[in-house]
Length: 479
Ligand SMILES: Nc1ncnc2c1ncn2[C@@H]1O[C@H](COP(=O)(O)OP(=O)(O)OP(=O)(O)O)[C@@H](O)[C@H]1O
Ligand SMILES: [Mg+2]
Image (cartoon, rainbow, N blue to C red; front, side, top):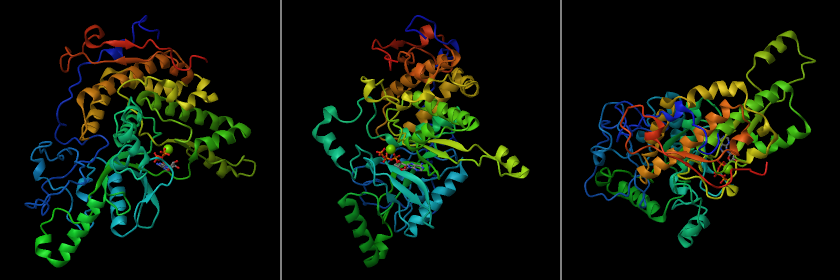
């Protein structure tokens, strides 16, 4: 698609005005988020006079969690809601209710039980933020938890140089195109997009509340918790009235841990010297294309080759296999699989000013020079060229993003304008049989909603959207 010269795809642009209503319909959980069940017996005891700083403690406010599928009003009577179970550890069990995903709910319950039993999350040593491997009671890693307050620019980031950087040098900190301190939503949002597009490359990621001694807490929160425990021992009658005894739960993204994977860098190097068999190569190419689509749609600004993983099990060459084994080899699930992890720096509210700072690193790989396969086009095109699909996607992201206390509708609209622009380019690229490298060379575009569009009506481009084409040179213009 040339800048402004060609009429962009009708289908996509015939977006009706999204109805970004204040709350989800009754019974609908925030996509990728937890809902809270209110009115559980025995949990309504909001004590009088206790000054609590909320689940995150230390000035952190609890995001607005929606009412459950019991038809309660979102946000209403919020102050009356139980904030956490009153267990000694202040566990967050009542805040993690995944009505639509019992499997995930079960995993989170296992994580909570393990923490109760003293099998505590372990900080991942590498990285610039507080990220934790969460275990089950046997000590097996089951997830990666990234608390909001310990993100690179979160106020409790254990690797505090970044936070210091933000305070001392606010003009040049972070990525100017991203909403600061909402990395956990970007992680969950990436999974939401992956799931809706049917890509299957992002391990399931949702917003979860967890509490653990091993998380980074302020001295105040730790002192408060100690004081309450002491009070409980000395004056149990009074202490019973406390809202919470233990440390405050933290909100963050929880991504399922995938096993048997290594960083892409490792395998890419191997494949150079030891090329993949043709079938596996095709499978890898297909997985790679899905990664490209994910990154492009969410405009990931942090996709180095260390932020995606590959699992590859080399198959026997078949020479010594019996017929039965060959049968098994053929019908077995694919031997190569990509996992797109670390999606916390995506969903910019404007295109990065300086693209060179945040390129898609996969664009330099040989795989990026191959046109998108028919399989990928068949998977993605019917979805993204359907305006209702795109609108649904924006609404689901709205349900997720609005739970953050720093949510700003105008900023969110800008994020969606960038994403719709990316989707517009992608639609055109897939229709034209382009390759990933050609995709990233397309001029950047944003697709804005019209302020005059009316709700629920299909409106034509001319009065529904404004397209802005950036005058800068496209990405990778030297290719
Ligand atoms: N879902 C997952 N399954 C398996 N391993 C994972 C998963 N998520 C992360 N890891 C492992 O943990 C490491 C750190 O994860 P990640 O990059 O997401 O954390 P981070 O704190 O954002 O780090 P950085 O700032 O260095 O990017 C990864 O390199 C990977 O080895
Ligand atoms: Mg990383």
